[in-house]
Image 1: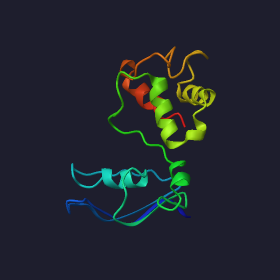
Image 2: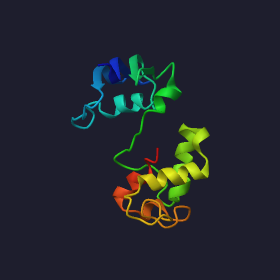
Image 3: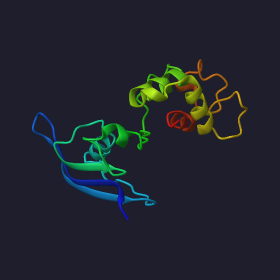
Image 4: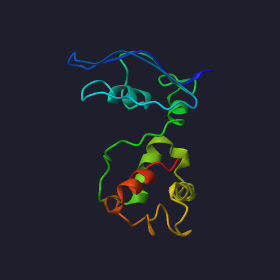
Length: 159
């Protein structure tokens, strides 16, 4: 079975010469659950950042769903959803504006308000009313910092 995420010979050296990552190898097959564990500075964030096309690798090859993240970055990114442990958004920005911004950066064609509304509703628990999105009655007005932490993460994964 082909790997859904394949990382081979990945390394990252910063401009200062610091080797942030040395020869990283990993294959994750469909249905597998994986975790990158280790102490601070062990090299967990760098491969995730490369896979998500947030950091350019110095060497190596990464494919997501068979798409090379360098040669076919848009197709690879369309298959990735990343929810960081800490949210690095403006805490006082609205849910709607935050999701609109992130979707516009990654998939401009899918920025239509109806699409965003549908996706945010799908991210909810299913118990809220039809007019409520992620348990928020008015996502256009509600600030991210007012949501429970579980809803903050859920609101950022509408696609």
